[in-house]
Image 1 (cartoon, rainbow, N blue to C red):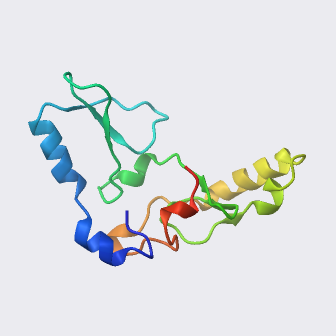
Image 2 (cartoon, rainbow, N blue to C red; image 1 turned 180 degrees about the horizontal axis):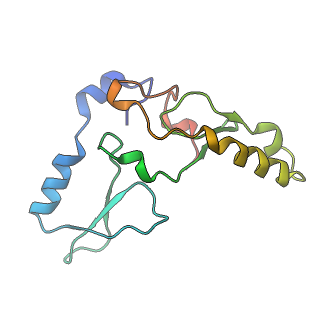
Length: 136
């Protein structure tokens, strides 16, 4: 995925998800139904192979429609959108073991700021320098 520090690499190596989906369809892989709380990956399975292939396609239309993800950076910032700017500082509350209620309140009060979508199609990938800044 494109971030602020990989423009050139992304331009040279990005493969559109639709091309991968077409290949999977032609080769006997079928999409699996998604649970209501599933992550963003579209999973495909094949009757002759163990496991699954998951595609995360943030550039596809409608990608953000069912987003149910929040992320916390390695510096304690709550990211409401992977491709957004800024974040809500949680570090002070993450350092205190005895104030989970305040942490919960801050997270819940931030949810109204979660946008309906990102601006990747406009060439804006937010201020995330690289994905290693995020926890898994």
